Image (cartoon, rainbow, N blue to C red):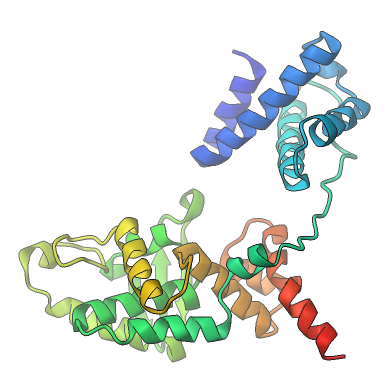
Length: 300
């Protein structure tokens, strides 16, 4: 089997999702094609740091790739060559001194689209609170609170079961299969738990067979499990009423992390609460946004 196939199988065994594996395959295959066409050699043990630097230059100046794209390629190659060294396919790792370049974004739109400001959060939820259907209002507010104040991913919300929620002053929520299949317990603190408490009581009164027999916490009027698509449709409905754009589950999770940063939480505390593997993922919430930098300049 070709080394790249062995590498991809290893990624799968390590629990990487299909999108991540596809991204690694694209980056590594691009490098291998370039290396063979440039040197006429497929022997990876001969790859030197200078070859990697030439490949990076090729991406930057010939392929006109953005630095963020180049960084993804570098990260993929770091993992690939670390794998080759670990399993003795090569002896020297040419990626050891190759660094990922820090990218300072000046794209105001991208920065502001990552999360909602506190005012935007309040505006959005105020329109959800106007929902006339009590069933939908309580359910939808509870769903939003779990993403916005406990940092759940949409897949985690969808798969929550009634038995996964335990009230103990605060509300402890058990996530049995989070990202990469990880088990976790997260907390929705008491001050943000009202809607979920009310939904739990209401959920117990739903006696239609499709609901009574369903173990899932969140249901729709016609199904025993509300799906990710249904949650996005719900968010789209209220974002339209609030005249807001791009309200997604992941943006609510981004807002959760940014709220923690704004409260003064350390980067390590945010990393643990957000269940990030890498502290680099968490760093974006600590770094001041373009808007925050402008505010600081105007305050001088």
